[in-house]
Image (tube, rainbow, N blue to C red; front, side):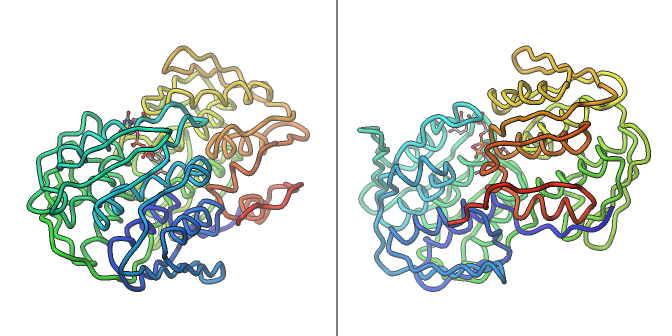
Length: 413
Ligand code: UD1
């Protein structure tokens, strides 16, 4: 029981740092969480020629972008953090070229770049894939506005194309664009910088290229996944948690699901409060692009269902390997069967503590939540994954009444 304060979204901050590259001068971004990925992105920007200062106390990052920047994102950084590819669009826009290492596979499945590439090609760029790098070259005179239809509303592809389009010649239309709050956040920062974007928040974005952008100050949107994780923490433990600096609007479906599962959700002036006073009822979940149910909260909901009354079907439509964590959850006694995109969970009245391993950020969070309600001791290994998405996760949980001991220091630089 208690209160937590949510910081800015990881998935927004990292992209906003890449957006900064589009304007020479000093960009200031607030509400940037103190996590490892932010230092990896800061290192990448430094290698491109920027000077970057991060203050963990004020959660503010200052990025000074020179007139002339480099255009290479090295493999050693991209392999550590896939979001590094967010520099692709800005580099082509600013320098006419980008040499960006291919991220390769990661723990949650093969995440393609085909739509990023096809979109840039439609804007006139030539893209080759050699020696593990994508080499992108804009045509003489810069990228050219065009109509791009995305086969799937990919967050990453929408962002790459937006960042490439804002200074392209003419009008770019991105059809079937992603509508995630983090994409809206990027649009808002770009607009403040002088970009012209119509249709923000819709799946049809029309970008009219401008000749240059100016550096600005911006505050990152609140992290809806972290906020949603606290909401599940309250529901799974039969607790009472007030989540501050959170947008209930960005979590409509998620909060609705928790209500269906028996929780009481009250909206507050700067967030919401979740209370649960009984065993949760099992709830079906289908992950979809926003405003659908977020894939980044899928493991936490499987954890919730594993102790719920009844059975539930969870369908994962975005990342095929996300169910890997189910094997770990089974070590705690959860009864989960997976078949392709589907996981069938039969709620158990009790889980039992055991050693488990986090396979990615959200799986790690899901396992910790399950550990909170498992009998005895649960040891979660590979918590560096959790640290990539949550600041002081165990400290905040302990403040809410959990009993968690961290056995390794967080790695933040
Ligand atoms: C982002 C988030 C991730 C979140 C996801 C969905 C970051 C760093 N990560 O990931 O946490 O879970 O959005 O909200 O912001 N795809 C292709 N080809 C492409 C692009 C995507 O096949 O060119 C596929 C991917 O393999 C995946 C799906 O489309 O199956 C979704 O990808 P996308 O929305 O781009 O997610 P990410 O930007 O990778």
